[in-house]
Structures are given as structure tokens and as C-alpha cells.
Image (cartoon, rainbow over all chains, first blue to last red; front, side, top):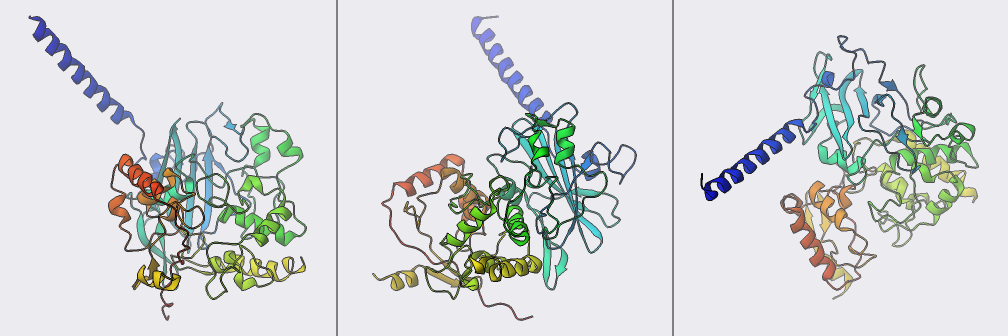
Length: 347
Length: 101
């Protein structure tokens, strides 16, 4: 064999090995399973029965989802812990899985699945339930439009992957309702749409006792996270904002928002946050209000409150939150209206 | 040109309401001055304001721009950031009248 032929053979072998390696890696790359029953939510051999390794939980301030009844579970691999070094940005161990099941009018419609498959990859998937309610299949990448009617002329959309990314982040992705405030043992009895903590559900106490947080944080039990506010209504409204607004309206740098942060980890001093909301002039002008009078909250002129105006809207160009809901949350609107007219009007 | 005439020239009135041409200059208060390259890419990819907010309105062809490679979108952003900043607060989109039910 001449030197040239040897060199060519070696080059071909290198290319072939490279192609093989690439193909192998592609085959090994984790992806969302085709059916919900393949995601390890249910116990092996017991379809519909949630595996006891997957722990139910309930954030104290639920996200508004057009009145859906929701059930949530988390799986943390044995021997692992959540890195809570940054209180506002918990880092979950590889292998962590979250599920959230949405039920409308007594029927399961979709189950969302978040899986930290590798150190640098979260998988977001949504499964759409079948007619028999026996299993759910992976939704297409673009989601499913108008899958079920949730109000007069309003239909619920199963989110596409870009919608998943819009909320759950592309920079530091992860779950939104699983943090110290949401799981606090000092649970707000007046939380808007608050759900009872059912037997067996885990909370912050469970995570501390089971050493699922690293570093160990005993102060989270002795002094559980709470929105400190002068009235119960202020506390519950700010909690609602944490769940429904704080994902974007914070100082993470993922948006250009410069107002008071509504992120769960920034709300300890509820009075300071409230003062900030009252003072903050919004670029978005409330329709019908004189230019320059719009504030996040305006106690003197409640109708010039941008937050209230955008909560009332379900027009795509102005509604808040901008995605994930097609129905106004009238309970929350009433609470904010009352808050402006009572607690805030006295300031 | 006064503000009103400028607005009239840069608005599109269609069934979705009225959308106004955005201020794409790097003015920090009224344009893209506070935007990051990442926000711009996410906006083009998702069709949502800053990648997270409301849907971009027609006639913005974000689906075409969003199909470009990252490097090309970064180049667009770099060009826009190289423009002289212009202070011009563009009105928020105007919704169409509510449908009667």
C-alpha cells in the first residue's frame, strides 16, 4: 500500500468513525417520549396510578390558567439535592422531572412535562389526553390550537415549544411554581385561587427535612418565606403577582423591565414593592387616560392602573399575562380593584 | 415633521387593529437601546415581544427573519444598534373594536 493510499484510507476511516459517532450521539440524545405513560409518571404496570416516587405539590399562589384544575408532581432522583445557592434561581439535579395536569370541565386535557435530561438540556413537552382518558400523546411542536372551550367563544390552546420557552426561559430554564415562597410552610390562607395542601403533598418543610436542598437551609423552616405586608389583601395580591407577573417582571435581564421586581424571591418586603408599583410610570399608556398618567398602579385614579387595565384585557396586544390564558381572571381583578379602593387609597 | 404626521405615515390599519412601525434605533427609552442581542433573537424566533410578551403584530415578517441563522440575526441587531438613536415613543397597538356576542 502506497503512502497516498494509506493516507486516504486513514482519512476515510476518520470520516466514517466521525459519522458513526455523530449518529450514535444523535441516537442517544434524550427526547420527549411519545406517550405520557412513557415519562415515568405512573407506576410500572399500573396505568393511571402515579408512582409514589413522584411527589405531589401545590404552590400557594397558583398561576391563573383559565380556571383549569391542576395537579402537579415532581421527581427528584435519589441521593440528589436542589442547589439553592441562588435563592431566586434554584438549580435542579439532572434527572429531575415535573408534570402538571390540566383538567377542564372534569376532563383531563393536557399534561405538561419538564425534564432535566442532561446538565445542559431541559426538555419541554406537552401531552394531549385521548378520548378514553387512558393516556396522552405528545403534542406537535407548534402545539394544538383551540382544543377545548373554556368560556363563551373562548378556547384553550395547548402551548407550542416556543411558548414553553417564552415562560420557562431559554437562558436558565426550569419550573416556575417550585420555589421557597411557593412551597413555604407559612401558607397564605387568603391566596387568590389558593388550593388546599392535600395529605401527602410535599412542601418546603419536606424538602428541608429530607435534605433535598443544598446547602442545607434550616432557616427556611424557622423563618419560612412570606410576603410581609400590612394587610392580608396586600399579601395575597402580591402573591398573585409573583405567580402571574414575576416571571417576566423582574430584574433578571431577560426583558427590559425596570420597575419593581415581582419575582418570588424579591417580595419579602411587600410594602416596598407596593410603593414601587404606585410610583412606576409605564411606557404602555392606559387607553383613554391622559399621556403620562399611567402607573403600574394608580390609587388616585384606579382606571389609570396599567396592571388592572391589562388584567382586564384579553386582547392579544394588551392582555397580561400575554400568553397561557384566554379568559379574564375576574376573581383577581376584583381583588386588585378592592385593594386599590381600600388599602392603597389610604396611602 | 410633527409627531402626528409621523404616526400617520407609520401605522398599518387592518382587521387586527392598528400597528405602528416600531422604533428600531438604539434609543434607550423609546427604541432598542436596552435590548440585548439575546432578546432580539428570541423575539424573531418566538414572534413575541422580547421573546416573552405579546405577539408581534402583522405586517412584521418575524417568521421569515426567525428562520435565519443566529449569526445573521446577530448581524441585523448589530446594524440596528449602529444607527443613531432617535427619541420617538411609538404608540401601543390599537385593538379593533370588541366583537359583539
